[in-house]
Length: 448
Ligand code: GLC
Image 1 (cartoon, rainbow, N blue to C red):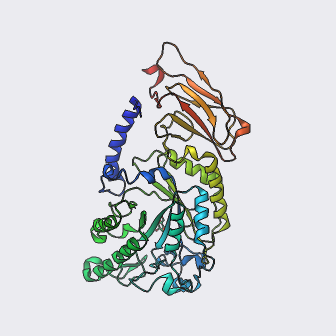
Image 2 (image 1 turned 120 degrees about the horizontal axis):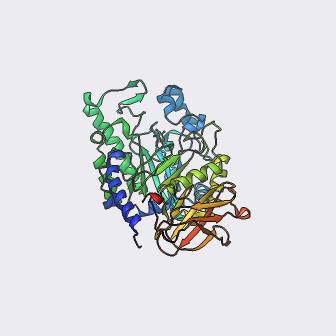
Image 3 (image 1 turned 60 degrees about the vertical axis):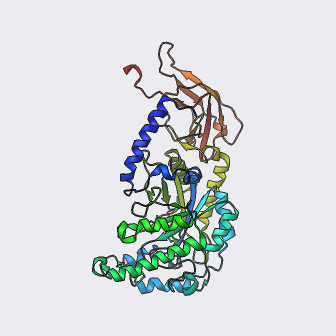
C-alpha cells in the first residue's frame, strides 16, 4: 500500500498512542508488535456475540450482582439452581443464529461471579452438570457447533468467585477474610481457579479468553502472568481480553461509547441488547437501528462490537434478541463489504458521519444514517475518484467537485447526490473508489 504523507503521520501518531495505550488501558504489559499476527482475525472480525448463560435467568435477576448487592439473599439466589433446566437448549440453532448475524466469534460464560460453572468442572461440585436439573455441559456442544460454522469460540471466565469458601469477597459490605491475613487460604483458592482455567484450556481450547472481575485483586495476587503463560502454552494463538491486570491483548470498554477514536490498536465495545447481561425482565430493548448505528460507529473507530444475549433458563433465546440479530445479519448481508476486513475510517471533520476504509485505503465507505436526503459532502479529499456506488445495489452515483481553485493545492469539496430510492432502511453505505490510496488535506484552507 502506498503510504501518503497523511498516513505516515497517522501511523507515527498511532505508534505514539500505542505506547500511551500501555498506560491508559489497564497498564498493559504486553508489547503490541509481538501479538500483531495472532490479533489479525480479531481485527477483521468486527462483530462478536456475547452470551450470558447462568442460573440468574431462572428468576430473571441481575447476574451474580443481585446477591452480592443484597437485592436477594444468597440462599434464595442459589435456589435458582433447581430451576435451571436447559430443556430447550439447541446449540446448533444458537450457532446458526450467530452465523446469520454476521458475527465471526462468540463468547460464552463458562463461570460468572456466582461461581456456577457451566461445564463439568472437576474442581468442585458447583456446576450446572452436578447441581441443576440441566445435568449437562453447555460449553462443549456449543463450541463444536460454532467451529463447524467457522466461528471462533471464546470463553468468558470470572476470576471472582463469590461462592467459593476460600475466596475473600462475598457481599458488598462483607468479606470472608483479607488475603494478607491468610495466604494459605488464598493459595487454596488460587489452586482452585487456576485449575478451572487449565480444565477449560485443555478441554475446550478457546480461541479467545474473556476474563472478568480482575479489579478485586492485583496481578501478583491473581498471578496474571502465569495464567497468560499457561493459556499460551496450550494455545499460542489464544487471544486474551484486557481484564487480567495488564496481561491481556485488547481493551474492553463496557456499555460506554467512545466519542473520539481510542488510541489502542484493538478494542471491543461490549454491550447489552436491553439493559442486562443475563435474561432479565427489563424491557428496554435497543432497536435494530440503534444496534446497527452503534456497531458502525465502533467499527469506524477501529473497534469491534461484542453484542450480548441472555438466554432463558430452558436455553431458549428471547424473541427480541433474535429479531435484533436477524436484522443486523440482513444489514450485514447488504453492507458487510464496508465492515468486515476493513480498517477504521478517516478522522472526523472530512465527512459528517462514520467511515471505514479498505485495507489498501483505495476505497472509502461513507455511512448514511436513516432517511438522509439531499447531498453528502466530503472535505479535503485529495484524490481522483474512480467511481461511486451504493452497496446492496449496482447503482452508480455521480459527484460534483465544488470550489476547486486552480492556483490552490487545497482540494475542492465533493458533493454526492443521495439516491432516495436506494436508501437502506437502517444505514446506507456509499462506496467511493479512489484512483490511489486515500490522501487527505488536513490544513486550514486560506490560513496556510
Ligand atoms: C461486568 C460485570 C459482569 C458482566 C461483565 C460483562 O464486569 O461484572 O456482570 O458479566 O461486565 O462485560
